[in-house]
Image (tube, rainbow, N blue to C red; front, side, top):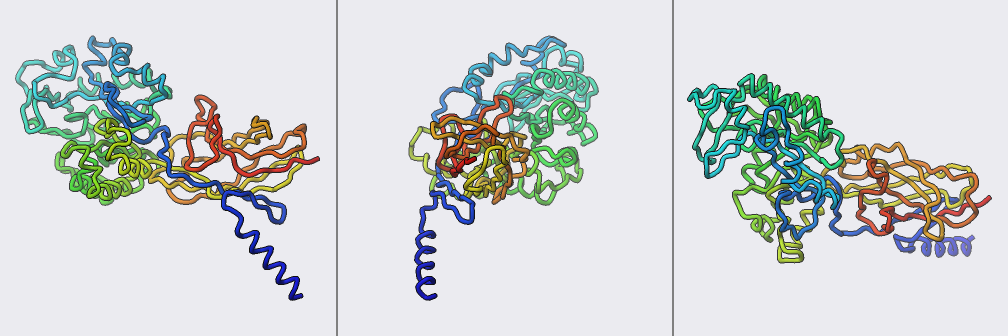
Length: 464
């Protein structure tokens, strides 16, 4: 008994020191633990989103950002200049690079010159130069100069609905559009003004939100701050002062506790869990240089803001123009490895032997090391690769990857083995498919990536 016990201990010890990336089997099962990586992953719907009109982007990115003014979109009443606008924002060029768009409609951009972002025809219909602030106002304030329409004007509301209806008809089901920020209202479309025209209450501003809700999926939409309508429909939020500690602390307080609007004195709700259903976005605050956010003394604070706000992307004021492998690269990479989602498998288990026609049960321990989920119903696929590297069978699972919040998630799925599959040694593979292309579309933070975007896991023997 002592000899057997000692031999068992030696064998057990030998088994336990197998490398973590090796396959091991016990009681008819095989387990596999892929080696994790620290690479910056260029994944869809997250990361940097520079202005689509610029080109000096040394950092890789899968998103671009574009402000669209009403003046650009509808220069003639009822005639939408989508083709001209798409040329201006380089729509086809970015599409060829598989880069998706974040769009925001704006009616008012403060600048160093007095100009107007609504069409002339609308300006004339709402009163034009009648010097009646109820129609609109040419302003000069601390933000700059420009023209603000009166957002309570029924004609502005009516024609804005028609504009968003047309935008929805054009882009609702377009996979090239990632997100729509609900701009429309206020300076820069940021839902605040500094003019003599009273800012409208929610019963008015909700009329600017409804057309977006009618025409676009909720998961695509983001508002500047918590509003009752944003909470009701589980919309995303964006912080255009990210990086600035004081302003971001205020933003986080609004999310966690709610706030009283300084514009309308209305009570606005807390939305602490909004990021679980729709994205958190924004851009770096222009109050400091972009370089200042990525110094040794500031990077930890910036990463803390990213974690607290569960942010997925930032743009258009974003460090995409940083020199590749320059002095900021290490801290930028730390930041990029924090935001959005970051999926990997830490362990995968299945039967080590199976017969043709059976179903291979697979258990995967996934980990999301990012700060946010993935917001779209993409498809988790399992497949088998033969010894020549060919995919011989594959299964689309019913797993809802939108529920993979930061942390760990055990996923149990199965792969059907064809009746006529020859005997041999096969390798299990996993991928998340883009439903628009039916091809793998998300990179994982682990080794084993094939040329087609699938990732290899453990091996299985198929025997008659």
